[in-house]
Amino acid sequence: MKRNFVGYIVLAIALFLIALLRPYAFFYGVQRGSLYGLIALPLALTLGIVGLLNLAHGEFLTLALYMTYLLFDKLSIDPLLSPVLTVPLLLLFGLLVYKLVIERSLKTHHLNLLLLTFGVSIVMVESLNIWWTSRPRNIYVPYASTSVSIFGVYVGGYEFLYTLAAFIVLAGLLLFLKKTRLGQATYAVGQNPRGAALVGINVKFVYAFVFSLAAGLVALAGALLSVRSSIFPHVGGPFTMKSFSLTAMAGLGNLPGIVLAGIVLGIAEEFVKSIPGYTGWADLVFFVVLIAAIVFRAFGRREG
Image 1: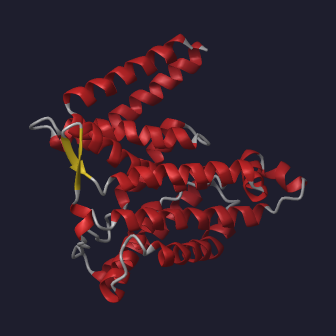
Image 2: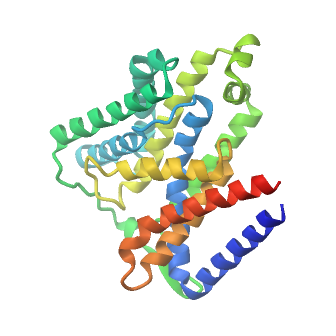
């Protein structure tokens, strides 16, 4: 217990020093980390309830990006309004993938499920590559380039939507899981599927619902990211590993911890990027901090 307390104090001091010495890295880190948390929440939901690590998670994000781009390019629909269409479409697409591919294989070995979702990711990437080619697309909107001054430090204003969206989605999921009958049934299935089935909960329905809900939430993240990222078939791949890493760091079922872990790791990334000559080390630092956090937690449990 003491070790955990000391660890949190050290972390708080480190974050304070970064905010003091590299304020722009701190604010950009909060923004970037919020995006990581927002994208990780759906994967954590699927992993925690269905028990499925969806290796196609990043490709769902890529699909959401392309859908947002298509609506903007062909119909002039603003990216911030596109979730009205992309969220329902991704919900249906997620349900279709679950029913046609995932549901029939849930009782097989976990390795088979991993290979299955990996296969889905490959099919999605190659399909996008054939249809759109590898040429990057971009969405340009004036408000995406706005900046705000915080204590004399100018940072991107648009990116704070990542933070706002992450905490809104987090609050919505927590309220859903704790305050609604379907949410409580979903939580029960995540805790004990057999026990939930014995008391009359439709486990198959819950699994399908959670998988499609996760796809819909990814569509929201894709809409926000679309104006600040180039869009190409492999753009979503790295987010799968980072989302899983945040889930492992925070622990299954710890949704607030996933968002906070994302923010901490985002700050660590941006701090390293702010050091001249070390920009390329940012991704390495992400996983070094992750490993350190997991080892720290393991020692804390052993001591307890």
